[in-house]
Image (tube, rainbow, N blue to C red; front, side):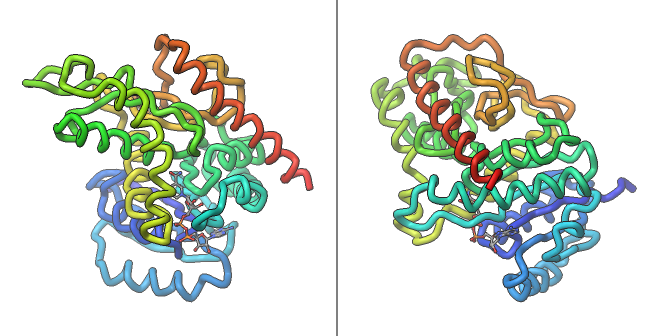
Amino acid sequence: NKTPLRVLITGAAGQIAYSLIPLIAKGEVFGQNQEIILHLLDIQPMLGVLNGVNMEISDCAFPLLRNVVPTASVEEAFKDIDYAFLVGAMPRREGMERKDLLKANVKIFKEQGGALDKYAKKDVRVLVVGNPANTNALICSKFAPSIPKENITAMTRLDQNRGMAQIADHIKTRVQDVRKLVIWGNHSNTQFPDTRFVEVSKDGNWVAVANVQHDAKWLKESLIPIVQKRGAEVIAARKLSSAMSAAQAAADHMKDWFHGTKKDEWVSMAVVSKGEYGVPEGLVFSFPVTVANKQWKIVPDLALDEFAREKIKITTTELEEERTEASAATAE
Ligand code: NAI
């Protein structure tokens, strides 16, 4: 009886979309009672592949899926959408740095920001996955002035999930018994996975990680490069970038935005800064947030020690540089 939600996935012929489509169509994101109309955008040369994906979607016979709109038309793709997963971008290959990609990709997000502004519902909620995700979201928002800046976010949930899984493994517990790992900053190797607030469920109570058996140096220092370099490690092994785990993280991000976070749970989302924690206004920066009524709220008043302040400064500087480069690229 509910009106179906129009959900856009860009890069729909790509590998992340291939894992993400079934999660959405099975109700893992918007719930088991919510019908979906999937808008699938890819570029013209990929329409043949997209048609194949669409055949498989049909063959899955998803009960919640009311309709599919596969298209290379930006207008048709963005028309009246409620939610958007902006995945489509030029992916990073082995040995390629993110900065090489910035120029090409911000142009895509300038165009898609314009399309959001013109065609999407005004309360559309957007998750940018395509890299450089934070700066793509910033550019998208800049060219979508009629959409609230709060509604355009970028994904650092994969980093959070990676970190939580590593911590659970390290302290020999289940991943659902770990919470409050914070990812600060950019989805890049300057990100700061901050374990100072991590809590672990022990005999039914949540306790600070300091109170359970662990290696303090590993937790404070070693985990950081493990999470920062995990993406590159997957590329080296798979010869393709993370896709199954990226799709799962995108589903987790949107699910929490849609349904809200659990009591006393934080999730990391890259959202527009209003100056919180000294981060310059307007940067799209990963913060710990809680979500209620489809609105995120940055967790306030967390103490930052010198180590954290230094790490946050590094990732902030990188995002400011990206903003400058992106502005120049979109002005060309
Ligand atoms: P892929 O190369 O398999 O698929 C990308 C798809 O996007 C291709 O089908 C391509 O034709 C399409 N595309 C390119 N330009 C487009 C445009 N203007 N409009 C619509 N579609 C367009 O790449 P994959 O593995 O699916 O990754 C997609 C992006 O996600 C990459 O930028 C990757 O770096 C990023 N990523 C981000 C993560 C995060 O944590 N934020 C994690 C993993 C990947």
